Image (tube, rainbow, N blue to C red; front, side):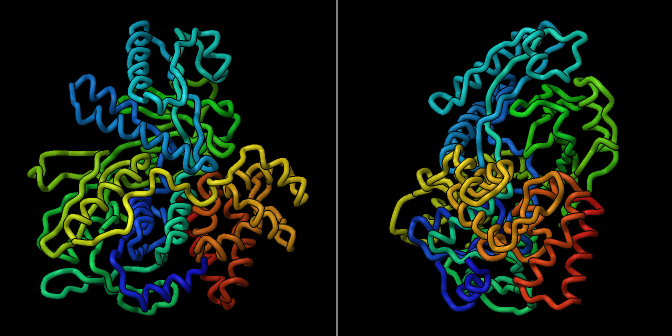
Length: 536
């Protein structure tokens, strides 16, 4: 899946649909359309999931907070949102089992009234899951709660409620969706910026784009355009109509990563109510502990930064529930993501739908989809394409396929295959298990590269190999050091210092594969180092 081949198709072919934006939603739309038999192109200005879609809390979930809001507000719309998300959770666990898996969560309770309140709420969560349930919730007495989470603060602890949800690797999932779209016939390229829209008789019929890797400009022609640019939704809408009223505002979500010994593997914790009325999480993730998140108004930017106040907010809430000192020095990585909060123009700007999604069409025919949440990306894409077909007159060869279409790597995945992989390719078991989970039924191909001189680990204490850098360029469209370190492997999100240490090795492989001269290599390494130093 060479990027130059994707660019060549975008330059020369005419498409039914051009999707702008390569996050979860945009890649989901491209996959849905391509699997229905439409001719599809997708252009992403940065990298797949470089923004919002790589910076989630890594949960595939219905949203217990939205269920609480539905109950307290008697809001059937919130009930429907939770039910849809729980259905989609089951779909994602089934279609990408290498990247998504069930996770056990506990909610510690320190007040007696909390016991029936949260137990009943989570039983309703189970009921809404129906056949899509991944396990029943139950009450844990204090002793059992501390056995499961020994680092919990025991003083005043009454017990905990245990429940199940899903967890995933968001960036690798996003890349997998993009690659599956390509496998279904789509032309998909990252680092391609839309600079203008092409119109004929007042209708959008394509886009002017610039390849940011070589600076060349060209046109992509399509019968219909979909705007799936998340926080940048209004920027693209203004290219279509400079006078259009904004429909998206941004909220920042900050996460921190702590050492994996902080909580036991396999069990996470939900903090049921923060000081500003949100929920927060502390979760095991890829060997470390992920904690967050915040929710503050933000300005849209390519690389939003976490403030010290936001970091302290997370640490302060962790200290309330865990024994031991938790300080800034315990943090291994920090990142900040932007959530697109949407107002539906058809509702007169009054319907704030922080996690629901909206599909609108401009007078020129530009389709915009925004809002929503990661878990429901597939349903969002299906809704968007269904409406696009009604408005555009396009006639697909098939109905929606994505409810049954495995993502690349998932069809033949065997959770126990790591042992065979280690034996066949002489890998350490830790590395083999990681490759099996990250690449699924393609792990053999990645492991084979390790036997060709690329078996060196990128950073001490982590399973990532030089072979993965080679694979990322040849098969996953990676073009920059951060494409590799942040999104093909997740080292930049797990440990900033380790990512800096791995950077020279990554640049060495990229330089050979992409034929960089010495000046380009120095520039790319410096840019990546600067991004790592200011945090993600």
